[in-house]
Image (cartoon, rainbow, N blue to C red):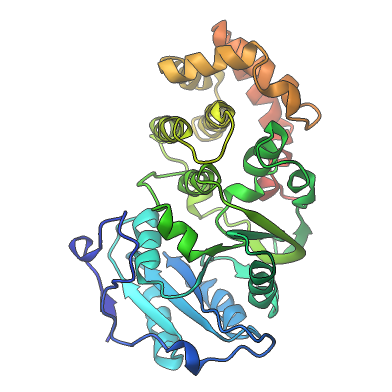
Length: 394
């Protein structure tokens, strides 16, 4: 018998207490699982939202089941899959005592992850996308060891990209992690130009840190991971890093990251407004308005690119997107700030400062055709794919 959860059954998203939805199969007590390679008995909860991934879920789970660190619970949150994913999850739960499956209906990715957080009983949290997998059998051990050694709230590792069954390197965190966390260079590299820290995967979180700061997933249709990750940053998370690759990101064109949606403009601005609100009362010292500025820029650029690619490759379509962004007072304010050289002189990154300045100046002067032509050039020359490691195809 599996766990069927309706929306009414889910706890309030701000309630991350130990109170959980009663499963059919009880969690294994900590003392029942002893790690093979460490003296610690800290428990790790791996949260995996599942939606129509019958081709990939086996690889994802098998890599977790072969970990040398054994004190792991795996929480599979089936978000109303229409293929055989839910049945595969049920099968794994029947065969493994440390796997629990929950069927929540089609409530969305944020609800699935929040349900996982509410169900988790581990000391540490790991998020894995069901079409990806952890890099090696040592991955969980490596990250637990680093958290124990440093006392950090979040540990991040490097990752590889899987494209057409070929593993490709991604830029290492050393490009930003050596900078002070409060610096513009760290924030721009960590959450935007390189982006490693904006992804949920490839990291291990101290569960007590998330609970104490009431960090959860807001109901955004896109970039919910960026909002979550930036909230961790604003709440003063202490970071640690390992040099090893800990994750394999699969370039899956069917995933939500690459699925075109018509209402992403409203979503990106909702994310920006959410972050603007929390930047005002951030626990981490410093001025963090640059985060809002960078989020608006990347949202606008990304939407211009996506609408161009999915709406007939017409510049006039891009112009409509740009005009809609410019109609938001918050966006207009921050484009003018960037055009006035706020925040961009210290971000590093080669051409990035020039690109942000030129784009923002064009938006401030309503030069939408000029920006649209620039986006067209970047897409047709496939330069846009090289701006993000997760989008690169070579």
